[in-house]
Image (tube, rainbow, N blue to C red; front, side, top):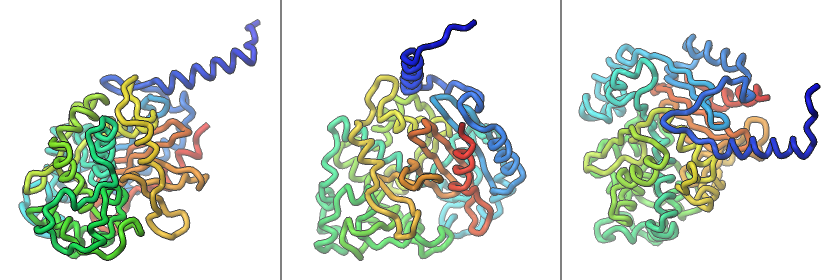
Length: 402
């Protein structure tokens, strides 16, 4: 007969398990486990896998699920992006406005979705994958490392204090009141038309990416609202953060990330596109492998700690993922933090999923209570084509938890 555990012993065992999970971090790679061993429904995952393979969601490259510090589902899908987009890569359009062989031709299979076609690893889903606007969230995390280290100014610093105002257009009292915090929360009040498809030449981000000096396009934008009053998606605001970071710290933001974010997390491979003027593209230029993108979201599940090292402060984590503003008045609409998308939990609107969102289908997400990180990579960039339904897919995975 097996000895019975006392209630105290069971409580201690449960606490020890929780502590072990909280202290579990990957080394060179993520440790693995079977889905059933961490409470995931294998049948749900298998059905999702079949649907992706059948092409129901267009071009999906990878689905990675981390739970309790272990990779429990890692599916990689080979796509023929030469056949899919190469003909479009040769036709000038808003997604291919300049050099047909350059990094801002979004149809070019040498550059998208994998850097250099994946260095022969794209077929395995293991290359550096474009993150697009998930770069914005990671830019916020890098700023958080600098704030934590006391090397970045107050978020309430006026943006114009970093610029020669005699060279900035459309200055009024409202523009003088824009702060770094407003850039982080996309409540800057500047006119920026980004609710159009990126195939539309009227999209302001398309205009910016077609220019030489992206910072000038962004800082010169006219004002249409009082800062802090309303949310408006503005990639130019995110690009200003790269320039402000360099001016405030005297260090390029990529170099800073390499030292103070990527190195502590064990991220060794990345690529970061540069604008024509040479500044890091913080609105959409970073490439990471899914397993390394998951490390950044996992860092926030661990309250900014990584294997005993404080990378970002608890205060920064809490402020980043606190809803600063709703993106619309529609019921169930996501909220927005410091470049974090805060999605309503599929079964409980009082809870929030910590997300990022990138053009083409880049969706990293963290679920705090479930101790789980999910990364979706895809490259569906032509309007009207099938895409992976983020919310519904997440709901299916959560519904299958035990």
